[in-house]
Amino acid sequence: TQLLEQSPQFLSIQEGENLTVYCNSSSVFSSLQWYRQEPGEGPVLLVTVVTGGEVKKLKRLTFQFGDARKDSSLHITAAQPGDTGLYLCAGEKGGSEKLVFGKGTKLTVNP
Amino acid sequence: ETGVTQSPTHLIKTRGQQVTLRCSSQSGHNTVSWYQQALGQGPQFIFQYYREEENGRGNFPPRFSGLQFPNYSSELNVNALELDDSALYLCASSTRDRDATGELFFGEGSRLTVL
View (tube, chains in turn purple, cyan):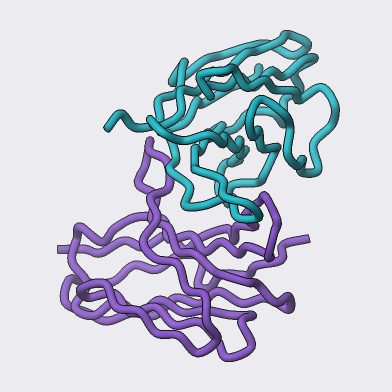
């Protein structure tokens, strides 16, 4: 059972376009993390959101945690080829030792 | 600050064989978590080691086992390899504090192919 559903699975856009990827669940999480993973490498943490309704910005990336702490979105403004990669969301339940990952959104930004 | 290092980076085994994967945690970290990432999937939690003891396990059979050493490095052992064990095995280290695992720092992974 995939607890975290990410959409879209694949996204190919031109440099300069905006995009949003989604991470949805029927479960409540104490926090949600977003990672980016490039081929041949491990995931790298981008942000952690903890409070329902929280919005965090990291340069051109905007992350939002849903009010009910069941879903999250990642919006990228003016995408660049360097944004290409696999974007993974991962949920943590309070006190748990594990992260539950979605399958990821594979983003390709063409120059 | 030394990051998380894993070895080997790639290896090929045949069904029924055994494999040991190694992970050196980031300096100052006391917790190691192992994840399996099959092609086209997100990472799946295998288990976590905290202060040399298993501290939680995912839905993996007993032929997946591990160790953590006094220097907090870790090994993942898989016995009786099956074709479906082919995956990228990721190690992540962190500093566990009371109930929280803390931010995970992943290594580059060990790519295992089972023929």
